[in-house]
Length: 158
Image (cartoon, rainbow, N blue to C red):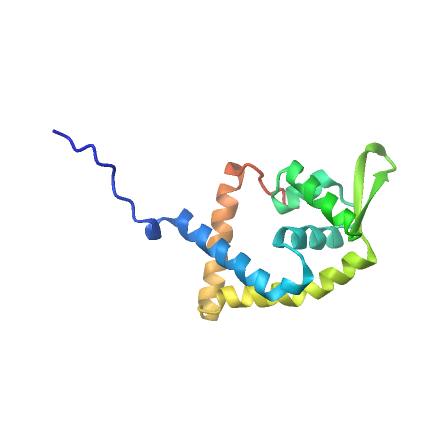
């Protein structure tokens, strides 16, 4: 007679579980490093992307940071309400809204950057420089190879 017991899975041996845990740790460190700035990693990513690509539209922004368009719109709404970015009507298509940082958005981004850099350093601190390079190379390889499986695939510029 076959056993009806489920197969025992060791969570710590599962890459998805380890990735989720590292993401939780990353969020915790980011919040420690930026707690006085009232900014989330997603808000930081949006501000940074808009700064790097002024005048991008929300759909392009969502693709660049690998977020679905409705989540992106909600975060943009909140950033706009805080006076950190503005939406302007595209001259070529009145349905499209182009994004730009305000001076307050530029300031918040500049204030957040040191905390973001410290976050990345703290995450990778246990690794040697060579291990860091290998880790990032392998991580990017996995992300690239599995990008199309995401509910919000990244649309990186080529």
